[in-house]
Image 1 (cartoon, rainbow, N blue to C red):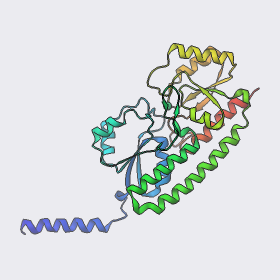
Image 2 (spheres, protein in one colour):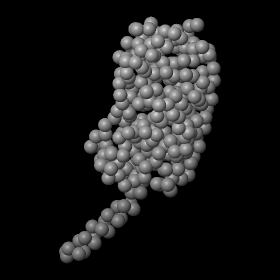
Image 3 (cartoon, helix red, strand yellow):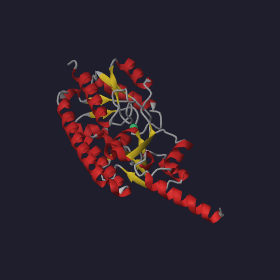
Image 4 (cartoon, helix red, strand yellow):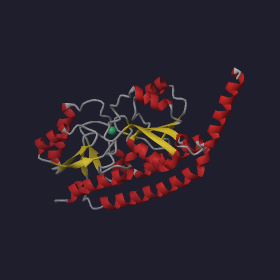
Length: 295
Ligand SMILES: [Zn+2]
């Protein structure tokens, strides 16, 4: 057989194989989401058509994350890269460059009204009406990259948006139970500002909107004074931060630990907050049970 006809045969074989298995699992749209909360939203909208890889898994802290060579490789093979934006992933430009990513980047917070608190606050997902903006951006990004899936993405997004709206109403209703004087909540870093704005609670934290630097002794002392002055009964830990500081503040002030809030990452599948909606349910239960238990 002459080399010419051999290569022709190979080409023909590949051509036939390519058409023979159009529904093979390998045909799913490969997308990457920067962190677990965003990844869950993408899964809800993408359904069976997409394969989602999350760079940051359960309980991971996105502020202090350092991408690995494996992350660069994962991103290089993706068609869409979903990111939060608002400065949450300070490591993203470097990763994008080093990976040679050729796909489309979708910023999920595009169109969100940013909150400022000593800098832009990136935790926009902590109010469910912002979550709805994330979902529309995800839907539009998926449709642009995979127009054949338009009807699927639109139907999935519609159902998910309805679920978010229902959850939002449930959150507001549940929080009505917390009396006005108990609506000051202490967490370890400033991740619940959007939540506070949306649902009428005030959050204070020794650490700012990023966990990048340790809280200063001055900031910790200020929180301790505030807890004593306002006789705050309970403070809360976060799944992504070291519990030592909050335990110290608890023992210094006599405020009890009211439980664990999920701020910047979901729990694992067996934990109490494996999805975006579950995260709200868990946080609301934790807050209401600690802040309404005694008067
Ligand atoms: Zn954070």
